[in-house]
Length: 258
Image (tube, rainbow, N blue to C red):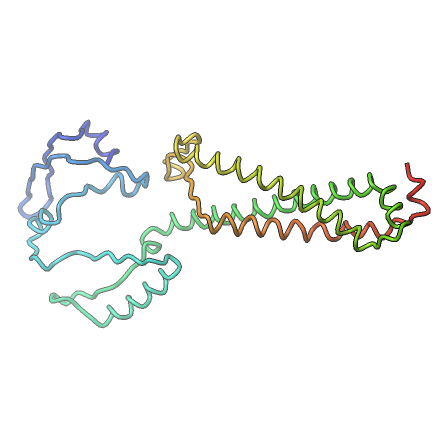
């Protein structure tokens, strides 16, 4: 890893001798063909990757012997179920030396990392809820201001026979137009920001704390469409209640409203 290479002052193409504490002790010369960095301290400070044949030779393993097998799942949501199923299936088997076989998921091996990720997910939901509440109050107050500014117009429309529902629809359509316009500009700015962050890594992170060197960006068209649709629907529903203020306005008083 980069941490080990920096501590040993090694670079690509350099060679070094590794000593293996066995009986008797063994030494092997290796040449560095690549340097990795995962930003996971437990990995970067402990593991050196080499060919499987070298380890098999040092441990006296045969061609059909390994210390473990990694199984990948396509759907992360099925990880726990797959691990449990594999665990019970392997519990009935033993290898040729009588050792029991068992299965562990990546979450069992690195619980601290996934607990940290779950905490971040919770923070995201809290921030989203707070943003919805703040933006909702802002939109409601904006619609109320628009209605109050158009009180005289509402009175005139009612005087010529317009119904409350028809007038409410006018303000709801206006709200939808303003919300849609804001969403278009917001999406353009957000996508531009994501592109710049993905390309140039403008916002850096401390790898020792966040396990990442920069803020990651992941764009999913389906999520973007659902998020925009959900935001539009929630915003329009929040506009319904203040639009009922139209029914409280009477033509006799509102026409004289200055």
